[in-house]
Each structure stands twice: as C-alpha cells, then as structure tokens.
Image 1 (spheres, helix red, strand yellow):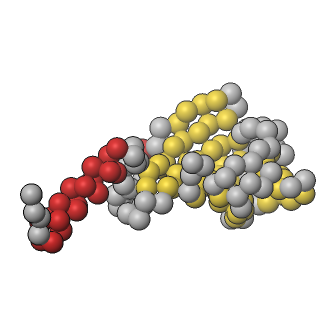
Image 2 (cartoon, one colour):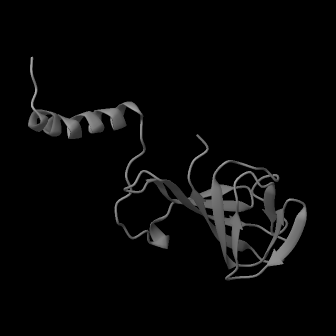
Length: 141
C-alpha cells in the first residue's frame, strides 16, 4: 500500500498522541488560579502541607508546587539530595537552610535555589510557625 506525504502528515499527530499516552506522560498544566482557601490542608504532626499543582508544561517540563507550614523546631524530613532542582520561597517565619554542610538563617521573602544532587535540608528554629512554597523543577526519572 502506498501512502502520500499528505497521508503521513495527517497521521503524525495521531501517532504523537498515542506515544504520549503509552509513555504515561503527566497531565498538561492549564492556566488556572490556585486560591489559598481552595488548597486542601494535610496535617502531619506539627506540620501542614498543601499541594498546589503537579504536571507538565506545554513543552513537557515537569513542574510541582506545594506549600508547607513547619511548627517550631520541626523539619519536613532529614537532609537529602535528588536529581531535580527546586526553589523555596519563605512566606512567614524563619528557616535554617543547610546546603552541603553550610547553614544559613533566612527570613520572610528569602528565596533558596537547590541545584541538582546538592545535599540539603531546612528546619524551623522557631519560635513561630514558618510557611514556605517549594517549586520542584524537572523530574528524577
């Protein structure tokens, strides 16, 4: 059976969509307002997490945003490293941020960028709660 270039051009979008479905790609993120009051709070001991968004941009780049509240003296998890980059933006309170063994105290409005595979972690030194956003850039796969 012979196919023309026009036939192949018409078939290409269908093949691309089928490949994306087979690869299990994440949902493409649509333009949307994520109102704070609409975010579901998930308590975890003295801490509270709120998922904001998770998916892929139109170009297929993985993106995740979440909001965390840490109680005084709390940390979300022990220091760790991962392939994806992330950015932390402190909204309220203060955090002691450790990257590769060096600790710095940050105040509201501060931004932290964690490059790929850097050992990092943070802890709320108190006395009030600390609230921050984390934006995960890319994936670990």
